[in-house]
Amino acid sequence: MTLPELYVTLLIAGTVLLASIAAARTAHRAGLPSLLLFLAVGIVAGEDGLGLAFDDVQLAQALGTAALAVILVEGGLTTQWSDVRRLVAPAGVLATVGVFLSVLVTASGAHFLLGLDWNVALLLGAIVSSTDSAAVFSVLRALPLPRKLTGLVEAESGFNDAPTIILVLVFSTTTSDVPAIGPLFGNLLFQLAAGGTLGVLIGLLGSVALRHIALPATGLYPLATVGFGITAFAAAGAVGASGIIAAYLSGLVLGNSQLPHRAATRSFAEGAGLLAQIGLFVMLGLLVDPSELSGAVLPALVVGLVLLLVARPVSVLLCLLPFRIPLRQQAFISWAGLRGAVPIVLTTFPVVEEVPHAREILNIVFVLVALFTLLQGPTLPAVARRLGLVRTDALREIQVEAAPLDVLDADLLTVAIPEGSHLHGVAVFELRLPHPAVVTLIVREGATLVPDRDTVLRAGDEVLLVATPETREDAERRLRAIGRRGKLARWLGEHGTPEPEGTVTSG
Picture 1 (spheres, one colour):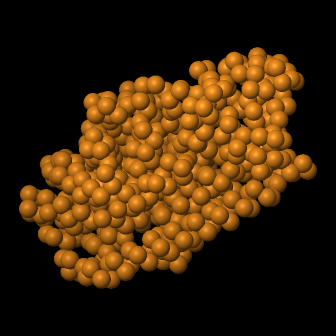
Picture 2 (cartoon, rainbow, N blue to C red; picture 1 turned 180 degrees about the vertical axis):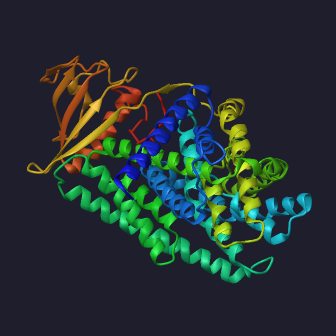
Picture 3 (cartoon, rainbow, N blue to C red; picture 1 turned 30 degrees about the vertical axis):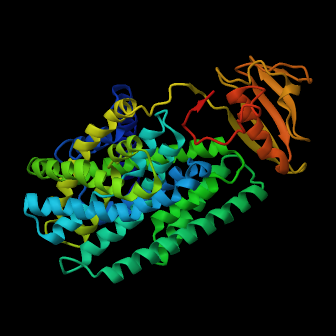
């Protein structure tokens, strides 16, 4: 590539990026899912629009899979283990048994209603059976829902990509209508076990390294954290295991390891995840031919309705039956099975393998994702309210940032007190922080204040504390507890259990 060509490429890429960011803002204000406008940007910039040609399906498959890895690392980093640890069993059943049930029901509908061959119907059912982590993370975290409900849907969306990809690969390469069940389950078990093990191990290695090695710049901590997640993805893929599950689990371990500069890491990961989503959806918009989409509308509606109204509810009901999940929550989980980038990326696998009717499948899935994201995404808040699941007694959670003090073997904690927090009006001595944690400085209205034991905290304050590694977690829990319930938090049964980023807390 020559220097002038580089300038043109960067100009196009920068313009598309800025247009996509503007589209995201427009979508947010209009209450629409951002992915739809990202796809629209890709279509407008494509060969039938502004003339940007892109038809390299193999490159789209590689870049799309890499983008999914970044999105899943970000999802793991921003998921609290305390909210999903008791939900691993139901989420795991939904991500495995639920996927198989959804594939069978959807494929049956496609076979009997559209007359598709069983192999094509099963491939189509497998492609659309996975809920999309990017869509789920972005939509659900903006809703004040019960933590267990949000955690269950998020965990399922993080786990079910791996089984779905395995099924799509099997149906893309098999020559018979129905593959042998034994090898299929053996392959699934190996990929999940090996990928999960590598993800957890690399996540643990990263957490130990980042807690004990002082890096020369704050900005290196977010880079290193995401880098460990991408390493887990690549290592698992290199040994034939599931890189997707490895990426999510490594992010989950790292995000729950009390790393330094967590706020900066979360912000960087969210930005990287959003950039991956923009690039992914714009690229997929470039890949499709708009002139071919009209013929896919009817099949997409049929398959989408079978999936939304039959396959998803049946799989949720049967899988969650042993776990005593309330029916109202099951109904919401059924409706919250959002599809997004994953199904469209998966359509590139049969195209690369030159499976018959693969291009038609790509068009059907593209239209299905666009139509049903437009239906489900904006209606989720109304569905949650109608089912009585929205929590109206919400307060903003305090955010605690940490930086290592290597010489003292201590951590400097920064606590921003938001409006509505019960920390407002609490004196320093009433915090009753674990010894030797101590409040060292308060930044108030642009001025610094060295507090004494009788200094009263106010909303808008930034409070600096020093804590040892042994007392840091207890100090954070105490601050969260008071922020939620006031100085009598312990008497009221509040112990400051961490909340996932983006959720809300009753006060």
